[in-house]
Amino acid sequence: MYAITITEPGGPEALVWDEVPDPVPAEGEVLVEVVASAVNRADLLQRQGLYNPPPGASPYPGLECSGRIADVGTGVSGWAVGDEVCALLSGGGYAQKVAVPAGQLLPVPEGIDLRQAAALPEVTCTVWSNVFMISHLRPGETLLVHGGSSGIGTMAIQLAKAVGAKVAVTAGTEDKLRFCAGLGADILINYREQDFVEELKKATDGAGADVILDNMGAKYLDRNVKTLAANGRLAIIGMQGGIKGELNIATLLNKRAAISATSLRARPLDEKASIVAAVREHVWPLISSGHVRPIVDRELPMSDAATGHRVLEESGHIGKVLLVVP
Image (cartoon, rainbow, N blue to C red; front, side, top):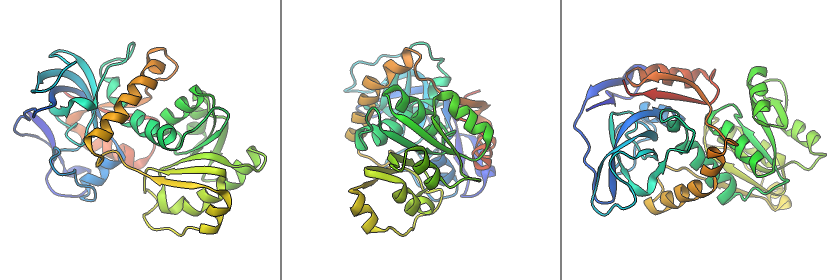
């Protein structure tokens, strides 16, 4: 088969579409013929040599895919050759075939094109696990989403609105903020021109955000804590703004607030399977009914993954960038 290999850590030009050995499904796995994958920030870090796959995972980038089951390993039930699926991966999505633990498979939701289903696994699992399973966002509460026009952000807006929460977003252009408003965002903050701490306090009569979904890490840590409401929850899922920041423990204590920090890739298989099962139960009906939809910025040939990485690095996109197998 062909896959995107990384010749050596570096820029997008390090991504090479090359012939490699076919994967073989182990016990408890299925083999998926990939139709599409999607570009995630973690893929950019892996390309730069900063985020290696966990032991035993495919060495190729790609944390999600959609396609058809080509083979079923021993010990797998409930799935058959020919089933159309999408999957959460530890790696290997930038390829024509990938072996996937059965617990990380999802059926393609009703009404969703097989290619576009590749835009769903990583964002739905990330948002549902962090905003709902860990941070317990409830109806009537306020969620602040940093990077509201990203793949994660566009899904977080839709899911939070679906459960009856109020949503605030930050984004860097008026076009992106308008798009977020179209998805249901209530409070729009241009982080290039406005202070999100002040704007959130103003929009909530001084209360702040009950839950914050943060992709920035260190750069926003202090301001995020200041923005939290009493009993607020800060969920850190990225470190685009650095890895080391100062935390005012007194502010955290006074607010009786909590901070969590998670990633999906390195979690044990049983934890991933639990998250995938929860997504299938709670999120898939919302997608099938049309209340929630994948947001796709563009589709590119998988052999041109380098362009997809450049798009994410330039941050001009809205939603997901898909890589389609030729």
